[in-house]
Length: 248
Image (tube, rainbow, N blue to C red; front, side, top):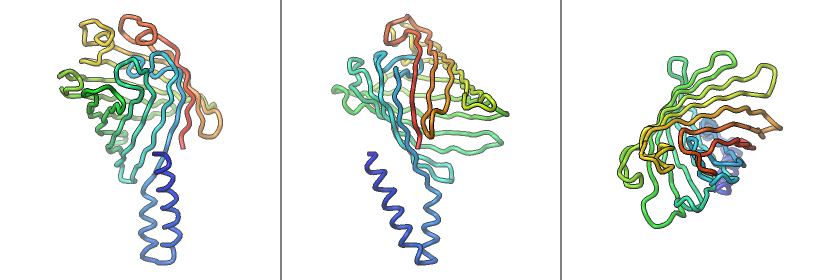
């Protein structure tokens, strides 16, 4: 998949050089600058999804890429390694698309995400989840309030799931360090207590952390993650997660 992105970039650059010889074609080349392609890669000590470990408490390799347009529309994909014993196979692939832009001085983001498990056992595991968030910044502080709702689907056992969350981030002035805090609430079949074997389909997850730029596109993040569920080692136990990532 990354090779196809490199091929696309190379083809675009070559076409731009040829089109520069014609005024009309040059205008078409200028339009192509409205499209931005970005990529990311990460190595994390534990893949925590809404407080619950999907990598069995082990290291996970993650990465993805996005294609966005100046109009605000975007599509992308992201993947992570999983703990094979969790029943979903060894890989999660997220495919999403949506729109983001300024609305009344705040940033609105709406879209649809599909969670896919390409090497899962036979059965129905993939599911869809629309999402929406609104974010704003005041000085060094930024905040995001969002929600995601997965309607009743066979892959969710015929049940639904609502997730509401809030994130805050403080960029410490004159330093490359940022502090962050997260609080999420789940109501539905993906609630941490329910996943841990209890009948309760409600629960919270939270985290606090710090991140810093290391060199160029490389960043390092350290955060403490907790979840409102029985403590199961490598699944719902509180833990410290370290992540090295890079964006291009």
